Amino acid sequence: MTKTVRARYTLEFKQEAVRLVHGGQSIAAAARTLGVVEQTLFNWVKADRLGKLTGADSKAVSVEQMEISRLRAELARVKMERDILGKATAYFAKAQS
Image 1 (spheres, rainbow, N blue to C red):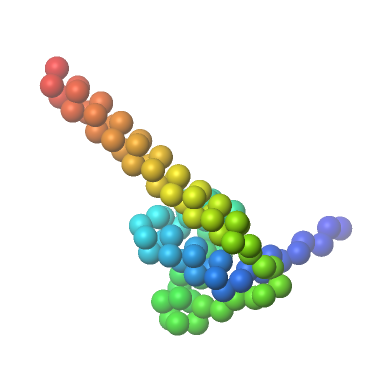
Image 2 (cartoon, rainbow, N blue to C red):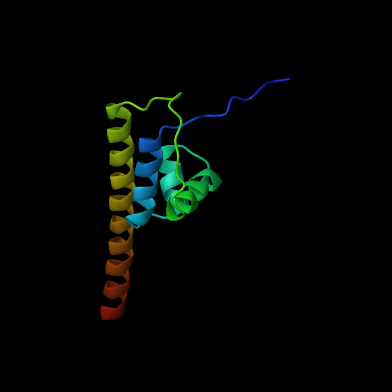
């Protein structure tokens, strides 16, 4: 029997994750980017809205890890925008024919 260890995240990490969602990313996309479960991120967003978001100091997130998370989120956003623009271009090119 394998015992799973529950991950614990700092308040700063949770706040950054919530900022991604408030910045326009879907919970699913932000969760994939950060490597957390969607339900966990949903709970963090809900707790933040209620003013009850807290963090644990047992899993320190370094500045580099925060920057990597931010860059992953930005990359995901840019890819989404690129895909939307590609589809729009194809649609309008088809309409012109």
